Length: 117
Image (tube, rainbow, N blue to C red; front, side, top):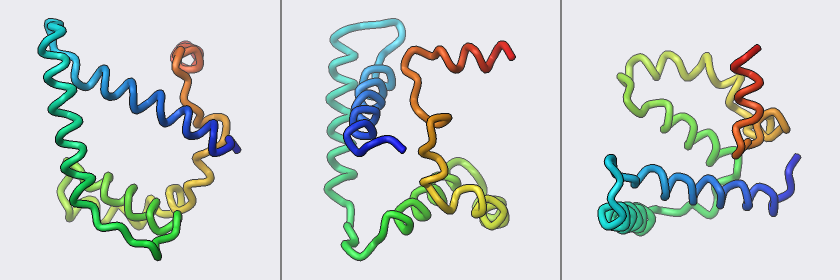
């Protein structure tokens, strides 16, 4: 299992990539890119300001909340409500998803190997 320092480094790389790529205009324009990044950060700060933290929430509770809420995104609630009980055995323990096979590969080497199998 990766150390907290390793996990933080991976998170930082992903966060930087999201900020860079999710805000990149097409066709590329540096001024627009900077404006998009500022808007993204402003929206993110707004979301963070509205968060209601629960000091009693365990890591397992938080994980359960996050993956279930994410699953609802873009789908009808009736469908997801039926699907979630079938997914619980796979998603209930986030620690299962921390093995080396789940590590972020910034160079895409592993994904290339998988796609050619």
